[in-house]
Length: 196
Ligand code: GLN
Image (cartoon, rainbow, N blue to C red; front, side, top):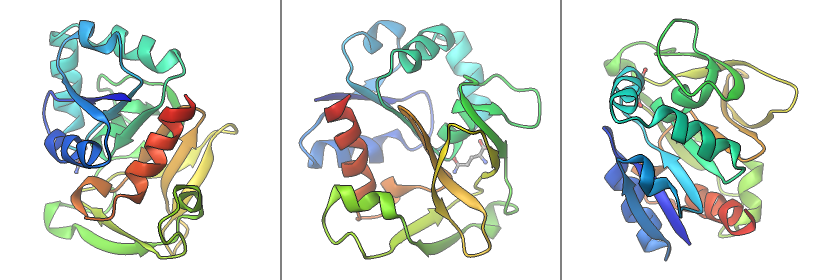
């Protein structure tokens, strides 16, 4: 399995390491032609406005949209989730594909970053102690204010705030599974890629 990680900015290397640990071939993606033979793609955390700027500069916006439209699994974490969303509440370049409304920096500033255990039933398919909560790290994170009809909610905070969702081949998390030793979310994604 060959999985790309968009490597324009942000914490792409952590995703690369986990993918490699799980036996996938990981490719740092910076050019449109690198998308050609990938089975799946991860868009990491970082700064979504910077992603937009660099992706436009590198001629990646339309190729990334085409890749997502091909039906191959694509997972956005944090800034990656913002980059996938249709509605980010402001004018910034995004792929605009996932039928969700995102609120950026929804929990406050960098110092308001936090960690929380979440129940994520979808991870049961990824095995490995499924009933254990998933320790989620939120760093100047976005939340999902609303999701469209075709979007499945995968995780919520105790107060009902949506922090993970899936729309067909598109997966989004407000938090950073690549920053914890728990690889269940990456296994879940690789299972989607395997079925892809
Ligand atoms: N606050 C960033 C943004 O709006 C996302 C932060 C992150 O990816 N950890 O793009």
